[in-house]
Length: 227
Length: 229
Image (cartoon, rainbow over all chains, first blue to last red; front, side, top):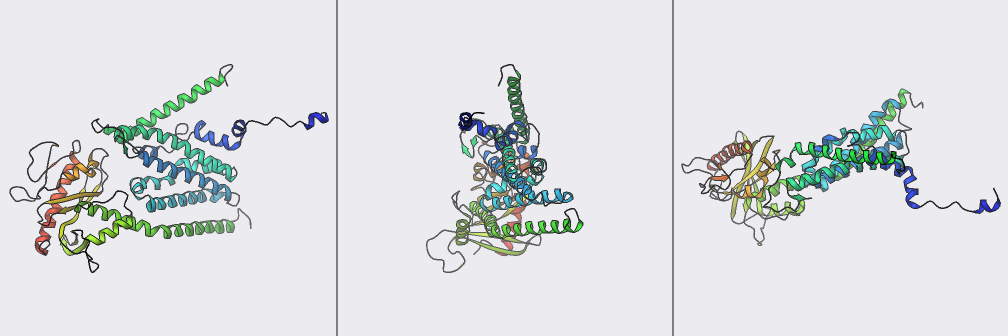
């Protein structure tokens, strides 16, 4: 290589491409969309059905699950080298349960009304397969920062589905969005939308649409000339 | 120390458990006073709502508790209902005059007491307030229920609670009883209230425990002289 060629700096990669090439982006996108915990892995369905009849409750649950998943993954990744293999699950559960209890206490102290409505389901985050799944599958093998991003991605992926399910349920069932009345009183309310069956139907429709979009995107890539 | 050795495993496990226990104890200590105040305020809000006091939706727990102490006095009557003490909340007229003590003073505007029973899905608990004549409903409020949203859960709706206001607690024959009739059906008797369409079980349950608890309260009131001060 000539001296001149060595002095020429390689063309800078556009910011968008640099972000897309980063491990953080790929980790986030995998959990948020490609391997979404709800519509690809069918995990965390119980709470998805239970809290989605009101958007406010859904948002609080989403933030709680995202924080618990991200913080648990990050903390376990920090202590994993020191953790004896035979106590691995015990320590993981201890970490997850502690974060859930902290979230539960803060909700009861500062968002009492919401805590009264979804408190039981917040406690059940301990048994949410998404949280333990990400800690066991990802945090045991990766750096704390990347484990944190993975947890955020899984939490956001879970939130995406829950919000999509909750919007029509509250709108049609209560005639409101986040507690603000948006549908005239004269229009009848669909009581079924606030009951459990609507959660099943809503989740099924969202899974169907999201997976159809994924299949379409994959077919587009497989086609000659597809990106 | 070997990472897989039993001593390390024991030390590590105990250390982690103690560390997390300490963190949780600290957070619990930090939030306990606020949570306790929130729980008390939630109960006080329902009692005041039943007694007809108007509260802002965004009132803080501290504001609710301060106002409750200023206008409501709690009285306990031992052995009044089935051996358990009967708790009665006396609501007083709000006044700007200094009370001159820890007890609210002035004219009594109503008496509130707990009502509750088994609903369709789980327990229902609430507070019913009567006017000083102990014959007319001043208000009702429910602070716990697991009824179906949109159906039985409508017992919390304003229209349902308002339907009780001014209703008599005895029928024309003098027997204690609240009757539920189809919503919108007029005219209604003095002890008839709009039912919730599609929530027959919840309505029947509310009717049953109201009759039982109002009856128990009126018996105790007769024996203890409540409302005759």
